[in-house]
Amino acid sequence: MLARVSHGGDLVAGILARHGATHLFALCGGHISPILTGARARGLAVVDVRHEASAVFAADALARLTGTLGAAAVTAGPGVTNAVTALKNAQLAQTPLILLGGATATLLKGRGALQDIDQLAVMRPVTKWATAAATLPALARALERACRVARQGVPGPVFVEVPVDLLYPEPLVREWYAKEAGRGGGLTAGALRAYLAGHLWRQFRAPPAPGRPGAGKLTPSREAPARLGVGPAAAVLRAAERPVILVGSQAVSGLREPERVAEALQAIGAPVFLSGMARGLLGRAHPLQLRHRRGEALREADAVVACGVPLDFRLGYGRAIPRRATLVAANLSAAELRLNRRPDVAARTHAAGFLVALAGRLEPAAGRWAGWLGKLRAGEGAREAEIAAQARPDATPIDPLHLLQRMEVAMADDAVVVADGGDFVAAASYTLRPRGPLGWLDPGAFGTLGAGGGFALGAALARPGREVWLLWGDGSSAYSLAELDTFVRHGVAPIAVVGNDACWSQIAREQVEQLGTDLGCRLRRTAYHEVAAGYGGVGIEVTDPARIDEALAEAKAVARSGRPVCLNVQLGASDFRKGSISM
Image (cartoon, rainbow, N blue to C red; front, side, top):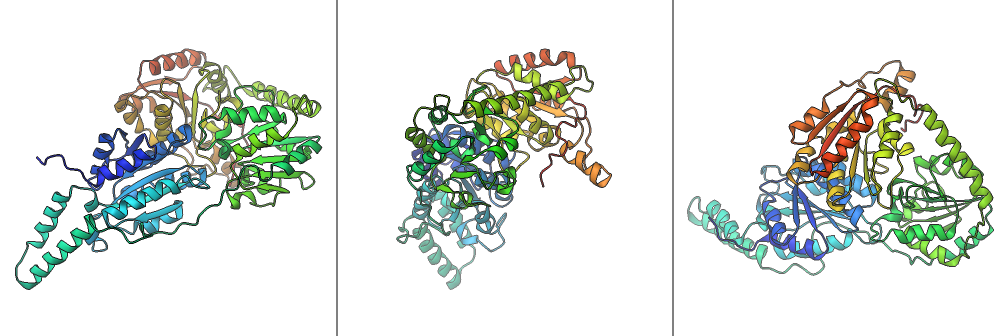
C-alpha cells in the first residue's frame, strides 16, 4: 500500500476550502478519486450521490441557501455530460458553483482514451466560464480564478477540467509513464523516455506562463454601485398612486441576511409580489405580500419596480406591464435588465442592495398607498376563497388542492419547501405559503424536472434540524427517486410527497383538448412508497382523504427520527390549472 502522499486532489480541495466551500457533492470515478480524498482531508463534507446531475443540483441548492460556493466533482466523459442539464439550470438561476470534471491523462488527450471527449466544447455554452489545465501550477491558478469568477458580477457555474495525471501522487504518475515508456528499446524508446521526463517536469514543476491560467475566455462583468438609479426610482415611487414591486430570485441570491431586504420592503410600503427563490421573503402572511391576480394588479399599476425579475414569458415578455406605467428595473445582468423592454429607470446592480438603498431614500410609508393596497388585498381574499371552494375534501382519489391545504397546516413554521414537478407542484405555489426567507427552492426559469433529489439533499444539509418538504409530481419523482439511498447513507431526512395521478397532467390536459389524444402522457399508479422503502427510507401510501392528517403527522415523526420518508398520495384528476401550460 502506498504511503500517504500529497497530490493534486489535495491542492484542489485546499483551494475550494479557502474560498468557503463546505461540501463536495460527487459521484465517484477513478478520474477524480484524489479530489474526494483530498476534500475529506481538508475538512469538506464529501457527499456521494446516485446521479451526476444530483451532485450539481445539491451544490446549487447549498449555494443558494447559504451564500457559500457550491462544489461538485464528476468523472470524465458521461459523468460530465450527465451534469449538463443541472449546470444549465444553475447558469439560468445565477448560482455560483464549481464543477470539477475528470479527464484522461494529458498525453492521451485526443488519442482514443476511455471517456475522452472534447468536454470544454460541451461545457462552454452551459457555464459562465469553462477551462482546463495541463500542469499542476496552472491548475492552481485556474481554480483560484474559477472561484472568483463564479461569484463576480452575475454569479454562475464554472467548469474546470482536471486531467487524471494532475491529481494522483507524482511518484505514482511517474510509475505509470515509466511503465508505458519501458516497452521496447532502441533510439525510439530512449527518445520517448526523454520526452516523458521533460513532460513530467513541466507538469509538476514548471510555472505557468503569465496570464495563462488555462483554456477559455471570460467576459468580465461590471457591477454598478447600488446607489445608481436609486434617486430617480425614489422619485417615481413618491409620485406613484398605484405602485407594484416585483421581487425575484436574484434579490436573495448569495444573501446571508435576507431579512434586510424584507425590512426594506416593509419600509417602502408598496404592494409586493414575490417569485422564485424570493417566495417567503416576507414570511407566511405579510400584509404587503400578494400572491394572486398579479396580472390584474400590473394592468392597473402606474409604477412597477422589478427587482431581479426579467421580463420573460412569466411576465408576458414585458406586455404584462402597461406602457403607461413607469418601469423601474434593478438587475445584475445587462441582458435581463433590458429584456423585451427598456426600463424608464435602469440600475445594473444587485436587486437586494438596490431595495435597501431605495428604502433609505424614501420617507416612512405611513399608509401612503393604503387604498390601493386595500383594493388588491380584497382581490387576494376573493381568489383565496375561490381556491378553497374548489377543494373537495371527500374526493377519492384524493383532490390535490385538499391535500395541499392539509400540508399547509401540517408544515412546521421553519420548513423549507423543494419544488420539483409540473401540475401538482404548480398548484402548490398557489396553496402553500413559504415560511420565511430562503424557504422555497425551485429550479427557476429553465423549468427543469429532476432537481428534487439533489435540491432536497442540499437543503437538508444547509438547514440541519429543519423540516425539508420535497414536492414531487409522479412524473418528476422518477428522475431522482434513487437519491433516497443518498439520504439514508448521509443521514438526512426530507419528507417527500409524490402527487400520484398516474399522468403527466400539465401536458395531458391541454394535449387532449388540442390534439384529441393523451399519447405519451399516461403513467402507472406506481408504488413509489415501496421504491423508497427499498432504498432504506420509509414509505407511506395514502388513498383515503380521511387519513391525510394522520399520514402527514406520521411522516413528520419519521423525519424527526432521522429517516427520510416518501408519501405516495393517490390523486384524482384536476382542472384547477386548466389553460396554464407554458410553451
